[in-house]
Image 1: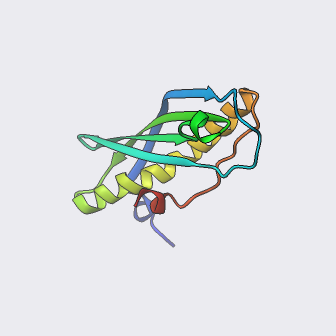
Image 2 (image 1 turned 90 degrees about the vertical axis):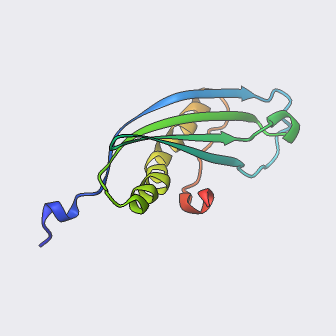
Length: 134
């Protein structure tokens, strides 16, 4: 049986906050079947053993020019404790794992926001975050 200390992660998720949500409806959208287009960017700031990871997600960029129903820009920041002396492991944990932890919150925000904006709710698909960030 595994010791609880051996199961403890070097990355501890403390909290998250939504920094901003910007929704712009395209009033000229011509209803048609479209593929979901979005981009994810991250920024990591270290303070002692803490990592503050900001994930920016831009959905349907330039809605009017590209005939998308809207543009949605979301920024979420997570606070993580990183307990590792190994710099390579610390970087991997904060650049990849943190985004994978925060992405479900972004998915929920997108679904709820679009439903409440009275547009067809958008449900972002589960994704391989590592592939998008590479």
